[in-house]
Image 1 (spheres, rainbow, N blue to C red):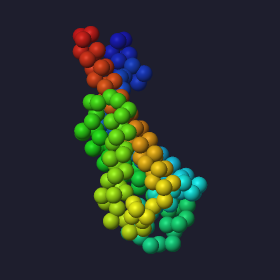
Image 2: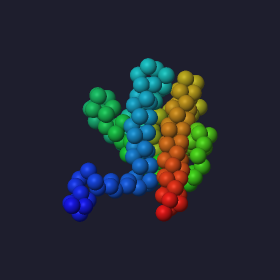
Image 3: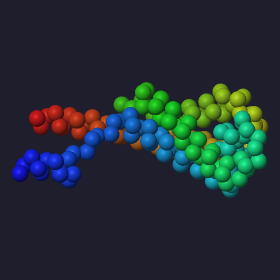
Length: 171
């Protein structure tokens, strides 16, 4: 009878999802949310730069880029690109469980995007040509993004380590 109970679906334990997989999922969701809020900032004129300026307009000149489809694809692409930033954070800072590292990571990402690799985005004005509203709102968005990515990944990593240690101690 007990063997039969172990085979039932409700008695099977779930396979744990790796910390890295959850971190990448966090990165994708953070990128999608960041792209969406970047689009909101653009539509309400808080920013001169839309997410599609980075992702699509830099390499394509199709008329559909300015439609809702261009916005949706841009937001999705921001999620895919964000997988890389989440992976970098996971590899470098996952053990540091504080909000400040995530906020600093967001500022670092802003500096990289708006200053270091800006020349590969011909549709984005140089940093000195951007309005103050664009600079302030984009820095805030990147800080929010970095905090989301950073604290989510660090918190998940540290909670998983605690659970593993508790499990080992109970054996």
